[in-house]
Image (cartoon, rainbow, N blue to C red; front, side, top):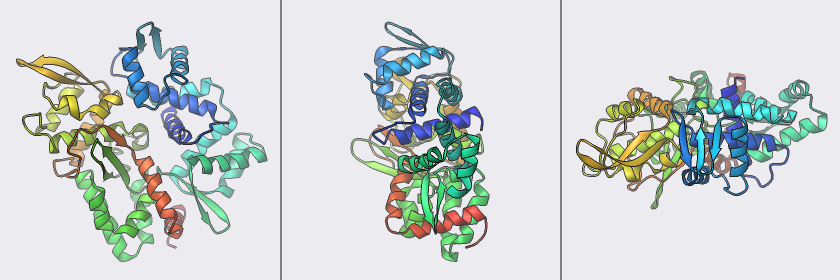
Length: 419
C-alpha cells in the first residue's frame, strides 16, 4: 500500500481510537494520526504563518487537547521539519493538503511502531477491498508481521472492540469488513449486491444510485422514502451510500452521497480521509440554496470556485462571515476583511487548493445544483459529521434487529455470486 493510502488508514484508526478511553498498544498510531489531523488543519497552498490564537482554535476544532496533546504534536511536527516554531506561533513549511497523508505515514514509521499496529493498517486495507473471514486473514497477518498466537488473537479482538473493522458472525466464523467497501471497484460490487436482492429492491436501489449520479447528493428523508426503512438500513449499514450531516444552532440535517463520488478524479478513499471536499461541496450548495441576493447568494458557482482555485479572494458579501465557519475550522478557507470594486467587508480565500479543485470537478460533473440539497439548514452551517460516523450509527441500529440482512450482502460481496 502506498504512503497516502496508509496515511488515510492511520487517520481512520485514530478516529476510532478517539472514541475509546484507552489507546494502549496503539500509542504510535494515535500520535501519528493526531499529528496528521493537526497538519491537515494548518496546511495551505503555500508556506503559511499561524499565530498561537489561530493554532489553538484550529486544534480545538480538530478535537486536540491544548494542554496535553498540542505541545507534543507541535514537537513531533517540528522534529519532522514540517513546521518551525516561534514565541508567537508557527510557520508551516511547504506542507499542502495533498501531502498530509504521506507525511502522516512518514511520522508513523519514524516512531518505530509495533508490528501489531502495522498489522491493523494492513487488515483495514484488506477488508475494504472485500469482506474477509478471520480464519483466512489470521495466518497471513501472523506470518507477515511476525505476530505470536496471543498477539494475533489480540489483534482481531482489538480491531473489533475499538472499531478498526466491523464484524459479522456468519455460521461459526467471523466476517470482517469496513465502511470503505464501496469507494473502489464500485460498479461490480453494486452489481453483486443487486443480485442478492429481491426484484423490487433491485429496482429501488438502481433508481437511487442513478439519482445520486445525476444530483450528487440528496436528503436522507428523500432516500428513506425511496428505499423504504428496511432496505435503507441494509444498504447504509455496509456503506453503499454515505450519510453526511450538516448542523447549525437550530437543527441537524442529513444528506446522502455516493462513497465513490470523487473517484472519477482521484482515489476517493484517500480524498475522503478528512471529509474536506464533501464539507466544501455542502457549504457551497448551502450558499446557492439558502442565501438571499442581499447577503450574497451564489449564482455562478463555477466562476466562484475557479476564482478561489486561482488563489484570488472572493467577496465582499455578508454571507461570507457566516456560511463558511465549518471550512474555517477545518483550515480550508480564511475569512478576513477586505475591499473589492469599491466595496468593503468579509472576503474569502481558499487555503487548500486541491480541495477546491475536487469540489469544482464534482460540481461540474456531478450536477450539484440548486436542486441537490433542498433540505439544508436555514442558518449558518457550523458542524459537519462525516460518512463513517453516521454509518456506525445506522449499523448499530440495524445490527440490533436484523443481522441477517448484512450477512447476506457481505457474503455476496465476498463470493461474487448469489446466495
